[in-house]
Length: 289
Image 1 (cartoon, rainbow, N blue to C red):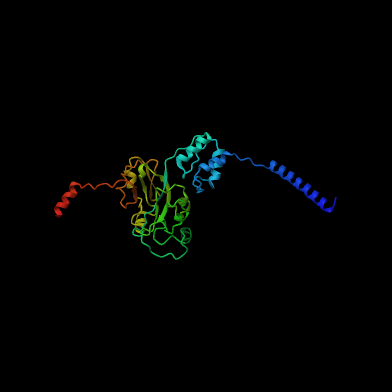
Image 2: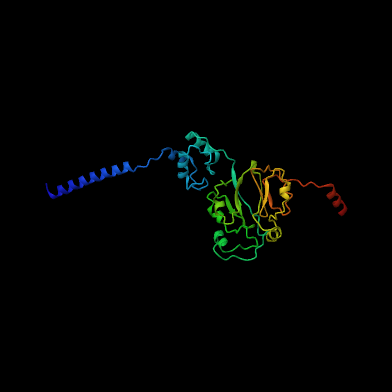
């Protein structure tokens, strides 16, 4: 056998040995993965938005398969329909939750909260918030640079050039929470979407005392407590000069709305109420005429 033959034989033996070693190592260190994970991942929306609390749909699918109880796990993008499908496939009880939507708790528009200075730095709320309070006298208000718009993967947020504030499209919003985590002022909140989209909430996060808050923004909550007294369901609390409406207790009666002297309480998607003229007001109109 010549040199060429010995070389071929040696390489062949080495190839077989390497293949056997790789086989043994692969068997020994093999990580078993439940094949159902692939099926569950395909059922999920594939948004990888992190709204479920996990890094992506793959990790969430793994947790769904491994967990005996999935009642605390929920995909906000897919909603109940997807979770029900996953639950039926895995033979587990799927969680039921009311649809949620992101709301901006700030009504500091250009008209309500005039600018006192001009920020001339990077167009980023995070950067601006790290440098100073903002362009207005309200240190709690929206900075208007659109960080929330940039992180929204569902095109549910847009900046309104007239107001200088972001606007949430409730039909596109999936309540993934990206805007909540991104806003450096913590102005976004996930609330129940409500029947027919009806919601009542305080559109303000100013915690200054009344006179200071009103001076910095004409529609700021001044912590007067009138809404607290007007609520028959104990749904409103007052803390740090700021009112908050608990959406789990709120019955959407709107008795608090007319009590707010600054208009800080918003009633969203309700039909426009026709103004009712009292006898006193009618008499005053007659006297003027």
